Image (cartoon, rainbow, N blue to C red; front, top):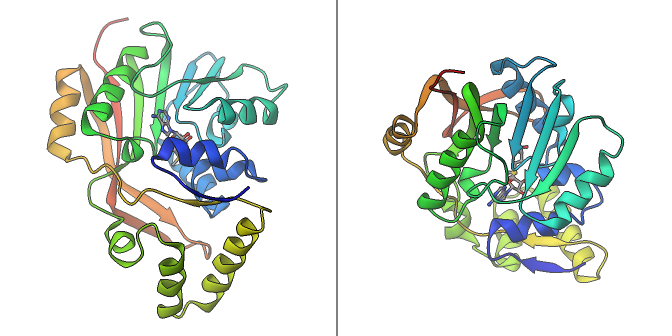
Length: 260
Ligand SMILES: C[S@@+](CC[C@H](N)C(=O)[O-])C[C@H]1O[C@@H](n2cnc3c(N)ncnc32)[C@H](O)[C@@H]1O
C-alpha cells in the first residue's frame, strides 16, 4: 500500500484491484453513479435469458451480474482484477471473467449476441488501439447483434487537472484548498496520509484521456459493418440524485450488419 503514480490506465486498474471495496474497479468514486450508468445501458439493450453477453473492461462486474443471460463473459486487462472478480462472484451461474485487452479479444468470431464496452475507449493509449478495439468488438459479435460503446470522450476533460496540478499530490491539495472545498480537502488529505503510512493506496492517474472525433468513429463503424441504432450524450447522476448531460462523452448503440 503506497502512493502509486500510474504510467497508464491499465496500471491504475491493476492497483485498484487491491482496494477494499470492489466497486472501486468501476473507476467511479460515487458507487450509486455506477448503478445509474448500468441502468442507463440496460434500458437501451434488448437482452433475454437465452443470449450471450460480453462486457469488455467490465469494471466491478456489477452490470454483467445484473444481466439475466445464458452466457456472461467479462474481460479485464490484469490478472489481479480477474482474480478479484472471480472471488467476488464465485458461485454465480454462467458468469466468467478473463484477462485480455480490448484490442485483442480471446474469443472466436461471432460468439456473442450483445457486446458492451463502456468507459474503456477513453482510457486507451492511442486512436489506433481504439479503432482496433472497435473492430474486435464487432468481430466477436453475432450478425445483427448489438454493441454498446459508452462514455467515449469527445472533448478533453482533464485540461483543468493538467493545468492546475498534473501528477503532483501537493499541488492537488493546494488546488482543493484554493477552491475552498474544505470537506474535499480534508477527505483527500486523510487518504493521502493513510497511503503514506501504508494503510491504503493513493493512485495518481494519467493526465489525459483519449479524445475521439464523432466523424472518425462513424467512418470506422461503416467500414467494419456496424450501423448506429441510437446515439446520445452520456448522463451523470450526482449524489443528490440530480441528472445532468455530460457534453464531453457520447454513447452509441450499434448493430452488426449481416445475416444469421
Ligand atoms: C472506467 S472503468 C469502466 C468499467 C465499467 N465498464 C463501467 O462502465 O462501470 C474502465 C475499465 O476498463 C478496463 N480496461 C483498461 N484498459 C483496458 C484495455 N486495454 N482493455 C480492456 N479493458 C481495459 C479497466 O480494467 C476497467 O475495468
